[in-house]
Image (cartoon, rainbow, N blue to C red):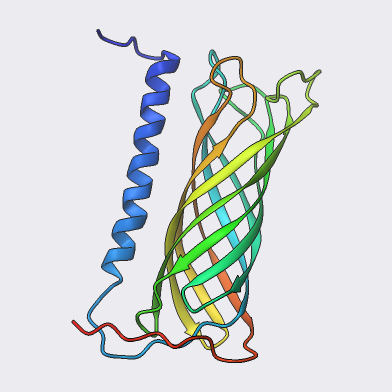
Length: 221
């Protein structure tokens, strides 16, 4: 059976394909960064503070433009329990002022927490993957039950993805790329969830290293 163009089902299929492509891209970049190296890895700092700029490709309720773009940023704080495993808390926000040609603005803010695993195999490139869960707050005309151009709603949120960090100096790291599947659970009159893609980049500051964490064995190829 052929799905008609412009139908909500077709738009959702296209969004899921974009999510799959984005996650595969993040994994591929992480694998490419695992270049042969005989250098031993530096132990990570115990506390790290990061700031990112992000682009979010979101989807709207049925009957509205299926996809729209949002821009924003956020910050996160990480504590390395061991050399490869950290607990990360993140706050981010993205906004758009027009959806589907209409002045239906939307601001989406998320508060998530969870584990992050990093591969400290070389001095410069560090691939990572993370799974963060928490909540999200939406405000603007697109939220359900709004009056005019105001309204707000809270929902569960989850991000799953990864990327690559590149060390610039001992206390400064470039987050070259991060790609996340960003799931929110706002009511939309259908499945009550939104499958979003978030792409970002930023900077990481290594704040504190009271003592060296467990050493990381180098990978010899």
